[in-house]
Amino acid sequence: MLLLSSVRCKKHSTLTYQFIYWLLALSLAPPTSRDNVASGGHGALVQIGHSSQRQKDPCNMSGTARQPMNMSDNQPKTGASSSFGRDHLGQGGRLESFDDGHIPETQRGENSPRPRIVRYETEADNAVHVYDGLLQNAEARMLYEATHNSKKNCATAELQGQEEPWGTYVTTDEAVRWMEWKQHSEGVASPGDVLPYADYVKLWRQSAGRFFKCSDLDDKGCSLDMEDTRHLLAVETVAKFFLETIPKRTGCVARADTSKDAERLFSESEFRSKAHGVAVWALSSTVGNAVQYHIDYAELLRYEQNVIVPPLWAGTCQVSTLRTNAQPERPSMRGGEFCVNLRGLDHYSDHGYKGSKSGDPMGGWRRPTLDSRLDSGVYVSEDSWVTIPYAHCRGIAHCGELPHLSSPIESIDDDCISRVIIGFNVFGHDVGHLVSKAPEHSKTFRRKVKLYRSTLATPTSHASGMKLSQIRNNKGLTKLLVLAKREKIKAELRVSQERLTRGVWERLLGQDVAVSTIVSELSRASEWPRKNDVHAHVNHMIYSDPEYLDSRSGKRYRIVFGRDCKENKTTRGSLVSLSASLSAVEV
Image 1 (cartoon, helix red, strand yellow):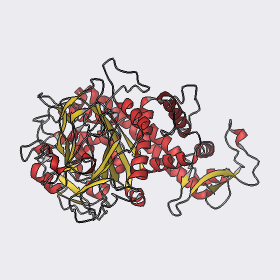
Image 2 (cartoon, rainbow, N blue to C red):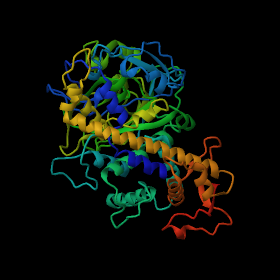
Image 3 (cartoon, rainbow, N blue to C red):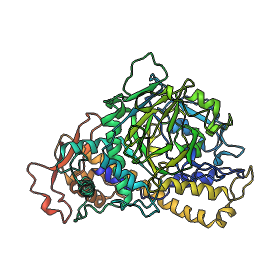
């Protein structure tokens, strides 16, 4: 559980110093227009019938396995993107030029790089998989209430979402840990139990408290804030969708090559080996909203490098109690279908970002006729468009390079209900660690976009870039420079702490070692970590009960006291004795 706790802490960190230094190095031309990216970027929600765009994204998804290959970047290196292919995508794919008719507002200077895309090799066929009954009602309701923020006098909810949309990042290891923990733990909330919803939420919070190792449980459960609750809901849903459902079911499949038998989108072992983690977001939309034609990609990397990095796999989960024709007992919604084109990047190259090349913001999609309907109400047209109606607890997954959209919502019977969709983008080890720092729709992502725009608002010349006087006159940027220095120091300390932790484990594996020996071998005379630092660090590792995954053997270990050691956990109030011996045992 140590890994999950550390992830939660990092969500509250301020902007990284590397990002702020990068801003100062940019040579920016005055922007000629503003894109709708403050909270949604390429998949932003637009209000049909109005000139302004609301920055939400109720239907941002994609997915299919790719085989990593050596990076080859034949493009001249310029500006901030010069090290992108070499440093960040060394194992991710092939980097090549690609024009989708869109230039991010941060990439409109004379020296900005041309748009490029990372293409991954894959043997998988372009297909869309639909999984009905993905979630139980209680699971879907918690996700809905954590996202929907009704301003109307509607029914009281157990969870009150204070902000929508929201986003977070779930590592593959987190999802695996949650799945394994639920399988071997007692008293875990189960949506299949015959419980009133309020009792289920209370039990879920108590389960979450134990998973997070909370110590301040009371009669209301663990004191998790809304951000913690949303993150753990995301962890739970990723585990259920990508580890428990997709590897075991094909679902209803719409595919480009109908001559082949339907196959699972990926196996569990394939997901565990290729996926670094999943960017998760949740968005609420109402009548008049739509998502224009686009493909998914790592949004912040496009902003910083003008490089399109599609996800490996992705999906959406539909959690509002809205009905299809097969669910007459639920309130109805007209429109709001999810639509994806099986031609992939060839189709996207023809139409471009939001139809900027073809002039059609819907990418040629038209509502299908009844005679093209498949199972589960899915429609497949001759021009390779797949149209999937909204349905409660329905999951959808497909190849990450497939362009898609969400059709306009024409009506919803119940004014108290909005259409809420949970979106997923699965990223590999090439860029996942970068995406995790500011997942789309998260607070960190919005702060970074806001900072970009404040920088763009400062007049600059085409050649000289940002001047020192302009920085001094920008109070917000000056303050961020101070924060950048602090963040640099914090980041360096985190790296040193991680290195020290690895050093301790390496000495413990396979033998008993005295604490004094560890302190002597790993401390430094004139810089961190000194002897007291190592001593305190070892003490923290003992009593925080961490686990260590040995990458060579694949085994997990924890720290115990040596056989002849009289030291025990009753001495927790002080540092572990230097004479105590420690060892690592397999979990």
